[in-house]
Image (cartoon, rainbow, N blue to C red):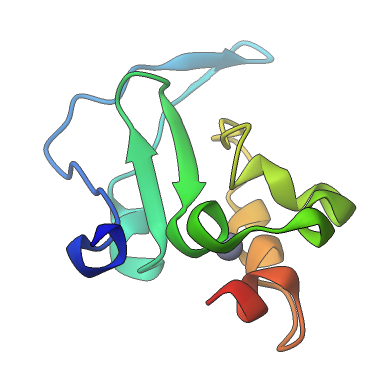
Length: 97
Ligand SMILES: [Zn+2]
């Protein structure tokens, strides 16, 4: 059921700004278009991966994979982490997907 609903992507939400070394950054709704697995939690102001959230197992805790499944991604100044999360064809993310 959760999977059929797809990722929660509140495109018109006013994403709050956070301070990164005196730089103000926030979640960018454009990322929803680029990453179809990306979810955003309004209450946590954090991003998650739909597939890793649903299908994580113990191996996902290796390599920081749990950031996108349980902790929540909030490093808005490090968009490259989204690509790193996808990783290689045999990555935890790819297997979850
Ligand atoms: Zn993932």
